[in-house]
Length: 177
Ligand code: IMP
Ligand code: MG
Image (cartoon, rainbow, N blue to C red; front, side, top):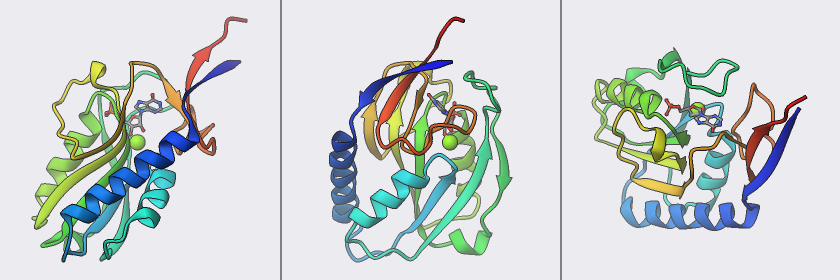
């Protein structure tokens, strides 16, 4: 059994999404970025973000990675299990959209991979940042919230594939039997 503790309410998430959309609109005037979501965790945040943006969008693509399996502790290794074609990224203004930056290993690996495809520019947008656990430095250009070192679920983010559909962000605590 697990217990859920509300950490970030739905309304606060909506406010943050609107703020990030405005920041992106301000920075991308006259450009049409490629929005690149990291599956599965970013799907709800990305859907909300693109609908709040005014900027015209060249394309929306997804990559899939895994670093966790069914544990709440990062294995420390990011595995790219799906790739976007190089041609889709070359010369594009790419905005990578992540759910949460934890150790930073997943995102820094992915950013390095993407740079090899020579995008015109590459920025990172993340809903959540857990800086206490960082092992690889990552610059987050557009950030929703900084959160404490707790295991969270909701708004696309899972524990063993569950809880993604929750509209708010919750901290998950394992209960003793
Ligand atoms: P990193 O490589 O340690 O930064 O891991 C990033 C990925 O791990 C995120 O995109 C999430 O999929 C997952 N992750 C990190 N922290 C949490 C959490 O608190 N709950 C659920 N998944 C998490
Ligand atoms: Mg993820």
